[in-house]
Amino acid sequence: MTDTNTPQPENGTTPVSSDAESQSPPSAHDLGVELPDDSEEAVGKLLSLVAEARDEASSYLDDLKRVAADFDNFRKRTMREQAQTLDRAAQRVIEKLLPALDSFDAALSIEVESDAGKQLMAGMEKTREQVLAALGEEGLQVVPTVGEKFDPEVHEPVGAPGGNGQLMVSQELRRGYVLNGKLIRAALVTLELEGS
Image (cartoon, rainbow, N blue to C red; front, side, top):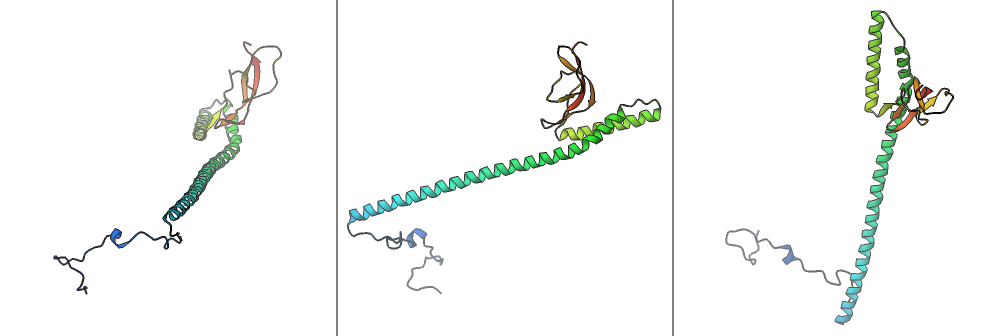
């Protein structure tokens, strides 16, 4: 039902009023502000209220920035802790596998003469290499030994030759391993003087 007093467009559609036409700006009373009758005092009071609102908004913005920075720090710390937890878990698993790798190394150091023994050794060698390759993808590296200069950070010597000079690794008794740049087991080695 249409109001007969409202003019209708000729095509029969209902006119649409814009929001700007239907809403007037809020009055001081609507905003809960009592303004004095003197216009200069009213302007002064309004400017004072604007300054207070600006200070309050600035305080809220500072709080928001602080919360955003705290959240960003929390997110970074959480990601770092998750990565450290994964690294520690990987290290524990790899450390538990080291005796099995040692067993492979010990078995592969045996000399065999039969064809069946040689085939068995070839299969063991391939299996050890596959395990080392898989662990290498997780960051495991073998500590270099024979022919290398003695490094007390990564080599654990069994005895030392007498005399002066550069110590060199002559034999590896047990492999050492580094995981993602961190030594998890030093290589057990024998030493000789360079040029001996």
